[in-house]
Amino acid sequence: MDARIAVLGAGSWGTALAILAAKNGCQTLLWGHNPEHVHALKNDRENRHYLPGRLFPDSLKVSGDIAEVAAFGTLLLVSVPSHAFKTTLGRFKPYLSPASKIAWASKGFNPSDGSLLHEIVAELFSADTPAAILSGPSFANEVADGLPTAITIASAQTDFAAELADILHSSRFRTYTSSDVIGVEVGGAVKNVLAIAAGIADGLGFGANTRAALITRGLSEIIRLGVRLGGKQETFMGLAGLGDLVLTCTDNQSRNRRFGLALGQGQDRGQAILSIGQEIEGISAARETYLLAQKHGLDMPIIEQTYRVLYEGLAPHDAVENLLSRNLKAEC
Image 1: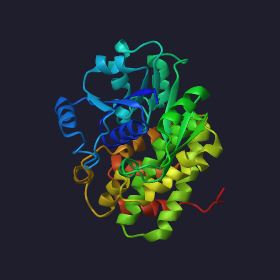
Image 2: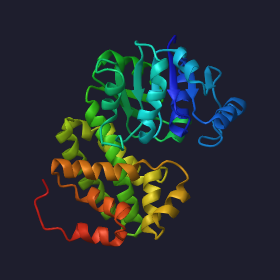
Image 3: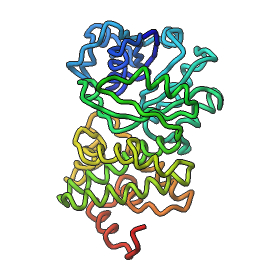
């Protein structure tokens, strides 16, 4: 394969995707913002901090130099926390070719105004810039270990979606394509909030029945918001919607779920964050999703109660009681 791809973000997910692309025969450059971390990646040939034990293929190079990364090729895959997405692309913009193509595996909203990440790409570059999002039920450890995984790549440019799918697809990593960028973005962002809610319920000891109800009713809330913002309802029944939601709500590899568990077991927010030790996207997404629901007049009770736990000091047990005491209504 003659393709070249630069992966921006040397956390667990960015590293896993870089390893995957390199193993697929793609010339791959992994960029990190922390000079000490970049130095360690180069010397160790593995990411001992975020993804230990997974050695880098020879075709995977590492750099902390923005100009070097920009000159490497025209295809960038951004895998940084959503709050750093705009800043990171802004740093790269002066160095990039007009022919650059921007993809991202970041999940979340822009924290300053609740905008979707494709809107940031259009703002910084142009509406015609090839842009794609990669999302779906995928833990970095399992991808790096070559365990079977399936994801969705969404782009308004079908050729770009197909190109990125070809680079990442392998016998153990199946790539599906979609044109519903908004639906895939909303599913990937809001599921993190619901994973916190599911973790809280499990931490309180409420069991499998409660978890199943939260996932099901949470999916309804995702659909409600996603369709209002322009997504397609069928997208939320696929990998980037239901698939990712089930994954993050039920498995303790999910940082958002573990954070919720800690809250349900009595830790305060600060203690819970320290116990995770990595980015917890659902914290900011709870605020941004709640504000979007308020803006559009949408009823999203699970999101609202999770927001109140995180930002208004509501006790987790009281949040669950608030949900259970809501007026009776038809399911649909």
